Image (cartoon, rainbow, N blue to C red; front, side, top):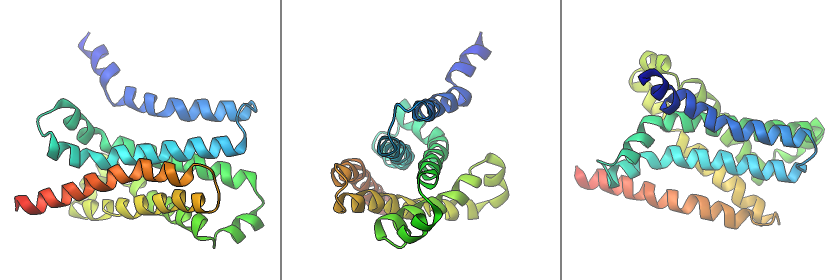
Length: 197
């Protein structure tokens, strides 16, 4: 009974819950139920939301140190970070499959697209080193590498917001609605840690 309970509430169940939306999106897109614009919007938002959840874990723990939610977020933030990369990868795959390579290369110099590519490539080493073995092997260097997630977050926000400046409906509002609360929480974290010292 205990084994069943730990299975249902453990990391495997969390992985399953994080993966289901991606599987459903892909199947619906393959069936023609989503247009290209729809799938890009949905995968982009999921990537951002997973990243945001991973980023708010520390500030929430500082605000509510004894709550189970804060402890759960902190314990599982690596899972959400990997999920953010997985949805970013899915987002990128749909983009690459939609256009010829010449168009992708030409668009890559546009700031709205370049920021997205930077976020994607920063995510790669972070995702590759998110295993327990990598944490143990890298020691203190692991935390230094993981600090690059803030650059990925800034680039993801810029990518989303700049698409809005280019006329993509709802992109600017969506980017601000998702990332401004995270920015405020991160400022709180920095202030709290500095003040505590």
